[in-house]
Length: 144
Image (cartoon, rainbow, N blue to C red; front, side):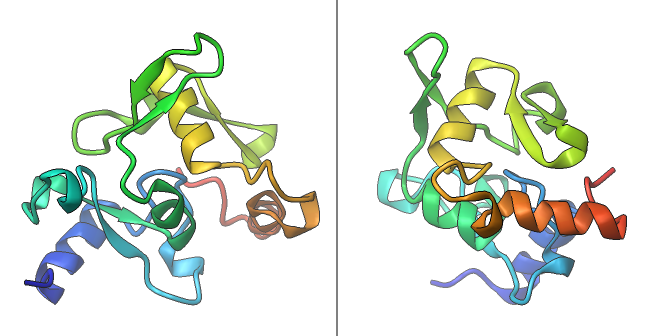
């Protein structure tokens, strides 16, 4: 059964209309963000509201059904950031005036890599960094 529009709206409001992984603003997007299953249904997750997070298309596609990633510092596997159980600011910081998300814990670093939160695979002019740069110039980023 699909997630109801009422539940989707609760998830949006709870997230303050920000992707709960990269903190992009849904209000700056041309399309609505998706409601992501923190533990994917394919791995036994449910539609319970405490298993749902607001995710931009980029993060949702990169997250896919992964629940863990590799911390590049320790080379160990860690669970991905869980916005229902953890605080974003305890695992990530904004650097370069809001251009880059830096993971400051093994979970944060593993999430940054798995979700490619800084578009390291693309040249600067085609990346989320370029978009964040525009948002910074307009005063709409980083989120407070």
